[in-house]
Length: 394
Ligand code: OVM
Image 1 (tube, helix red, strand yellow):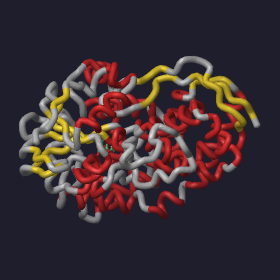
Image 2 (cartoon, protein in one colour):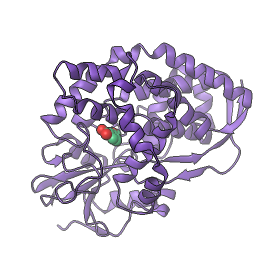
Image 3 (cartoon, protein in one colour):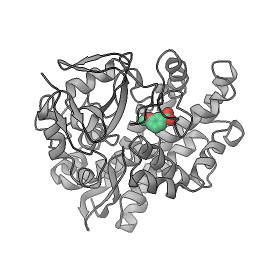
């Protein structure tokens, strides 16, 4: 048996426009495909993506989770102490973040996050017509997340071009990455400065990370790097997730009806949107040995691309996968990953999604798309740049 070849470029505009036919072809071609243009292996079926995620020793993150192999090329930024590591270093950092972002810590945010969501929903209802990407999907996380971190109110907008840059940098050096570099301006220096203990309030996730560092778990140099991870991973992702949910709910009006009738479904509706659009579309691993996968063998030292979004629409796993259905059970999707690197901020992301969707569901009878949405191009993140919406109040 030979591994099939494909000349698909999963980092180009026409793919981003409509990735589904290409993802379907990849899943059908076999459990493992070789993408000849980039010289990488790929998995697009749920079972194989999940198997890669569960075997960190064979499919390593320490050589980078983008297309670049840190053994062959120097990474542009200091590798993340949690994302771009394997055990035991990974576990040490992870335990700090798991403590800081504990269920109890997230639960304590339910009230302020609900309050902020209700206030934003009221503002949007007053305006009636707006762009749901900047005015809702970006506005809500940019209001609540930096507050939870303990960041000053100034210049929070830099978090967006910073995230855009890092998520583009997991892909090849193509025009999308070049444009993100050009747009990033002072964002890199700003994020670095904001990660220092003295830039962060006495209370918040930032201070919590530094406090744990002071007990000796992290060094003085490591603590700001861990804050940086949270600032990198925590904003653009939830922006894409909230945008995905609003877009899906606007395109499937029967699903909005169901959510409006039962706003308690907001949390599961957000999760279904993460399955359906999968904001983090792809991540790489690097093989540490000849790796058996789906009956094929991937040679050692190979980059392997996991199509998380394709796995989340694999008909082998999901009945009627292209239907957005808030009554299905989306639990078990790989939109937050799986295994030791599964999203450590998941509860925070879900709280944001739940609060903003519930606040809208209570007040809005119908979402109307008033103009053609515009896609945002990013080598890793799937989302929109613009989604013109008119709200019809209940
Ligand atoms: C990090 C990091 C950066 C981007 C994404 C991410 C999805 C983590 O710096 O640790 O997780």
